[in-house]
Length: 205
Image 1 (tube, rainbow, N blue to C red):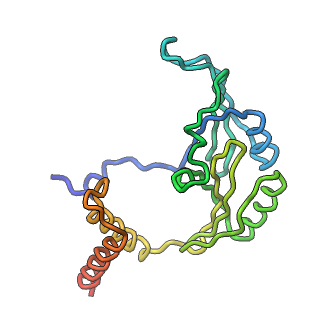
Image 2 (image 1 turned 30 degrees about the vertical axis):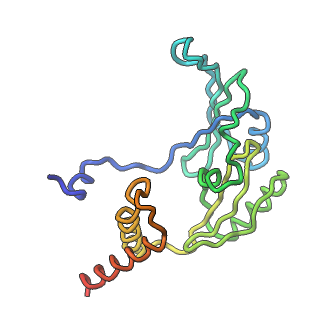
Image 3 (image 1 turned 45 degrees about the horizontal axis):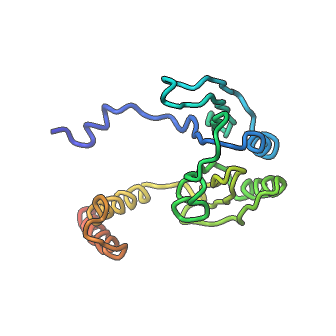
């Protein structure tokens, strides 16, 4: 049986995010926000008839892209003749809606503050700089209600961070599995992680 290390040797490497994509029912406002407000260049746009057989009901559409730095893009689909789907707005402002977001990279907190000024000029609300464990971020929404973040790394991640991540993820898997059938809590996971940390410390001492 192959070990995870042996399997990983046969997996090709990814090279960053090419693009994320979302539907929009506000093509004019979307372009005005990203191109005119945030100053993102538009390198590519596709116009197409609906794909597949006609009974599938796939509408004609435009697919347009904005540059987001370092060869990454954010893209939108405008499905011509369709109406807004409440599925994409029903969770706005709730934790499930906030979990699905796009985060871009800034070099440092000073650059985050400059972005806050740019975003405010568009009339969009933007949070103050929020400091996390190793990140600082600002949060805002585009005209479609999609949640966006710009973040910078406060310090480089080190080997100890990788070790801690491995222990956290193993504790998560052992505690919750899938769907948390035993209704464990975060405290159960923390106890499991403490046990794994003790074992790790003993193995490295």
